[in-house]
Length: 295
Length: 323
Image 1 (tube, chains in turn cyan, green):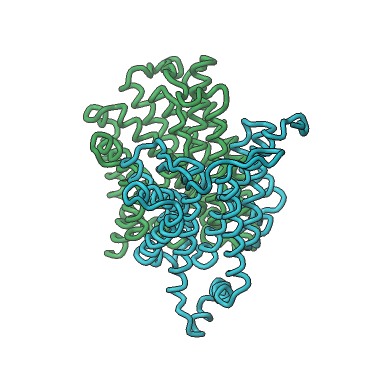
Image 2: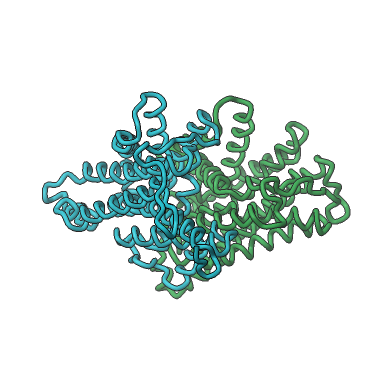
């Protein structure tokens, strides 16, 4: 084992991997936030709670219905997306003409309701959820031992991020979506059902959060509060990256995760706050965010 | 949120009802002075601390239109500083509260300087993120006592005269502090400075084109709001003899938003009413099986969907429409 910069490589790469995993979740969540904000002009505070919901949906599928990880990877995000459709149709759609801050406050209230409900049902301690048999174990890469599930999380989120980017930037559907973001009235005049598109976009963003939750369930424990601390970091990520670009959200998410991992190696006490410090620095140098444009 | 908070100016213009208003003010004063003989003084002190906290928060959202999601940092930060200087350094209560207030103002200066660089939704996210950073510092710093917080903060004599360990005496001290804070806010709102703040809220580009240095005004308002929130937090630390992570975590920022929203954003007394309702509700729910956060969240949803002016705002609106 060769020490690098005085740090054993095993430790260094171990923390880098953890950082990459955190970064995957930052990327998936900030991506969803950016897509939702683009079309709805709402900051979805409930994003963290919906991520938690995804994890719990997977846990419930397993424990109540005996449905395992792979089906849950599809079913749980769909379930979360359906709750998103209900939320959008019943509540959010009434707020579009108002200041976007009301959307933030409403989804904040929804977050409190969801977290409170799950906390009164399951307490604050986490429920274990084991990875599928296919992805357990670890491989020795020579410079580090890689737990297979963790490698899978990074890979899966990279693929999901790429697909989302591809659909939004390179397909006709994505073009319509981007057009509706710029000018909904005009797009509606072309005969496209914009309100339905808004609902489906919200469902998609929320479904992404649910998917992230399922991916996270075996890494962290399934707990009612798993989303609320994460969402605040994701907000900082969004401020750093700016919400103007899909690619920006993805890159910023992964980069900050890695930064956080490195901080854990070199100065552990600062690892909780490093993202916020970077946010402060970015605000000083480039207030609109690294990839952002002021809306 | 401009649409909601035009209550203030229009009500001032309505004027006229001065006699009634004075009578109401006197009745409220009498009620405040007599309250500790009817209700538990510690409960009333808690209520007053949160009422001041909500008023300080409202100064920012109601009169400048900035939604801070990080006011817990000032409330809790001041609580920690007050508790620390009172307990470890042995400072008298008045200086301890002053130290907490000053610390909150300093934090407000730094956080405000960063946050006013962005507007609207970003402002809310930035303040939330920065206050989360303060939370982690409080969790890890050596003097904050981690999960335990700073406990059994001494209640000495204020100005060497008022014995704070006597809860009745302490109640009147807290009432005086609240009165002072409320008076300061009332003065700010009704000063030329306050008028400019409202102008910024209504139309920022216009205020800029009129030659006002909008950023300086926003920052000043932010620091004032932070300092007053700190005054409330420092006082609260002495009342409960405790500064803990509860005071500084993001849920506390949410609570103060709820109080203000429920009572009425941009109305002077709305936050007081909201704080009274929320604190009472929490006391009541603490004994029931219903989880507090679920109820709190439901109130958020109902208020945002059904009466965005808040209770006091809706009443004022209704009165105005009637005549």
